[in-house]
Length: 390
Ligand code: FAD
Ligand code: PHB
Image (cartoon, rainbow, N blue to C red; front, side, top):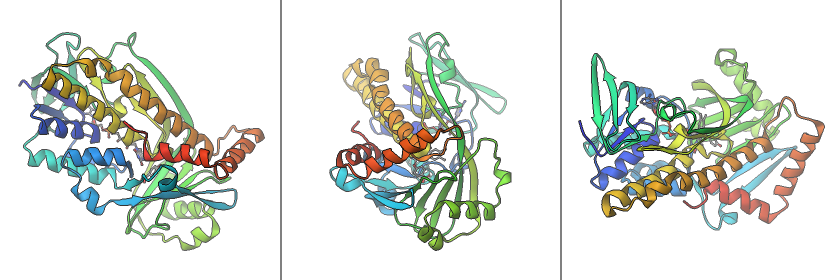
């Protein structure tokens, strides 16, 4: 088979790009390692930047997001015995975020690909990239007993952190930057009314916690746990008890608990691979970079990659202009590093580090005190959280 762009990975990045390109008459195929049900069973992001929402609308996939998603104009930070408010709307000059689950967004994108007759291959195994430095790159994959081949102009690696695309770039070309944090987040999804209409980020002596939501009947809570903990170590009762200990008294009293419908541990990591291009291969999303979830930047950073790559491919196919493709890596990375900085900052601000010094505790307290006493510090937080311009 021959297509213009072969996309590897059927997460939000790959799906969004294939949908946007399809609407412009650019032919793609998307190869996903797992079934659609498996992809949709992963509970991940919940907070979308307005820039991402705009891109979903441009992809004609924004209708349900606009109907069911919640606009959030602020959030809370509980720390040192107080519950402070961050007014995103005020300090970002009128912007906000949308609370809409990655699962729902991915479902909308799959439905759109189906509606538009897009080529999406599930259970594509042993995906391999070939001849990336030539004018005739191709991708092979296995479907059952059959090995298939896709010839294309370009390959997009949107196959997440553990995918094969980044690993196809020679080691002497790729530079990787990584910081692994000494803890993870244990997350629980429950069919209960959220404890607060707005998110609450909690810095506590027992560790970080987060009260988030997917809708007014679906809550998402997280607590910081040591990397040695396993999901099996945490019964629902133990999770709720620990969450309550970390919440301000008044919030804990209002918490409605219930059986978990999903429970998982995500280790926290910062990671960037440079460059994001090798010959005819372009990396996008988690395939090239990871942030700790504290600043809600991961999926949103994927969206900015897709925006730049989409416009670069449009330049090539519609105007014969390759400047966007040539500059993709540099342009994408400039924004990625800002998201890295912000996620690192929020992670350092709110977590309890096992090897911290009394000095570090004082700095955390001072940083929070400064944040809530300075309008310019608030503006920095707000403009990063709602998303810097693409
Ligand atoms: P992925 O979603 O990882 O998709 C990659 C796809 O490629 C997968 O479907 C995978 O099965 C497939 N694949 C892998 N290997 C292969 C292969 N060899 N061949 C073919 N296909 C392959 N981000 C935010 O912006 N806001 C948040 O609030 C937020 N909260 C988060 C909370 C948690 C607990 C976690 C873990 C993450 C959170 N994120 C958040 C990050 C966000 O989920 C990711 O950044 C996002 O999933 C990246 O999308 P992607 O399409 O690039 O990669
Ligand atoms: C979530 O709802 O899953 C979520 C929200 C905000 C974050 C991270 C995760 O910073």
